[in-house]
Amino acid sequence: MELKDAQLAVDQWIKKHGVRYFNELTNMAQLTEEVGEVARIIARRYGEQSEKESDKQKDLGEELADVIFVVLCLANQTGVDLQDAFDKKLEAKTRRDHNRHHSNDKLK
Image 1 (cartoon, helix red, strand yellow):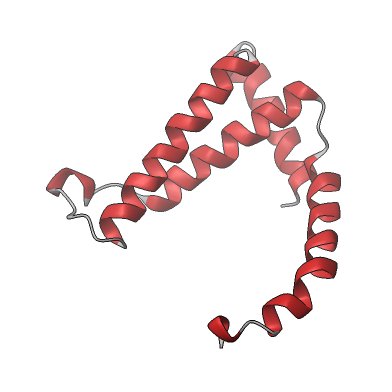
Image 2 (tube, one colour):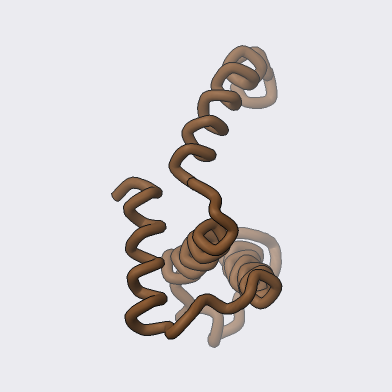
């Protein structure tokens, strides 16, 4: 699925099941909360913090999907075409970073 299709799917879901979008500030707060849940899993599962028994049941994929969902909501309600923005960002990063990363001894 392309990002434009994902944006459309989220918009259709909101209209069918969600009544309306939460306002941008609420969605930004939700995004922060969801990113925090991802950080908690990563810190405990892959970092140096111990993982509590209750954390072991958490699904990283589900939490990452929550982040994507809220990002898509924010893009929709602010008129951002994420497909276009992502394509431009990937092109810019490719131009800027290709040689830099290949020349980085720390990455070899």
